[in-house]
Image (cartoon, rainbow, N blue to C red; front, top):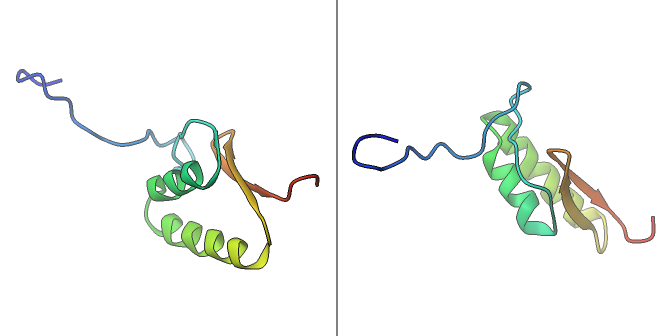
Length: 76
């Protein structure tokens, strides 16, 4: 914090591989947050993959676990 009490907002911490550290969660929102926090070209690639998976996999379930997005189909 600086002397005025304002903290510098830096967003999620990037891990050694350059991937964001995002809390685990289920659903679209945590995955979108993870993708939005990805640096540089990884963000574009993440969005493309997320959109592709949504179009191709009916009723896909999404989650963030172990600082990675996961996609699956219930029961499989």
